[in-house]
Image 1 (cartoon, rainbow, N blue to C red):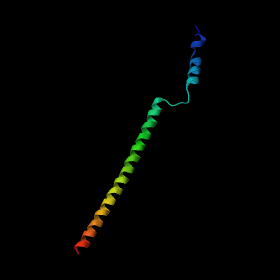
Image 2 (cartoon, rainbow, N blue to C red):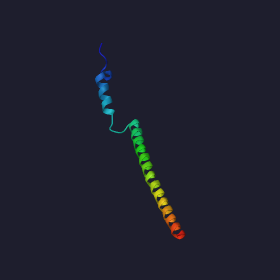
Image 3 (cartoon, rainbow, N blue to C red):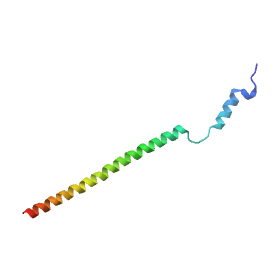
Length: 75
């Protein structure tokens, strides 16, 4: 016995292949957002280290300058 044409396997595959679009799936979107978030966090940490290092260097220079000034006044 032959199956009706509208239930044939070829027709099913043909219908499903035409429905697939070129958009993003939810999983792909979540993965891309996660990658971008990780990159932003790493860059923020790197910039934070640069800024805090700069602040420490400025404080160290100011302490050295004050110490030289105090030694000059003592002499």
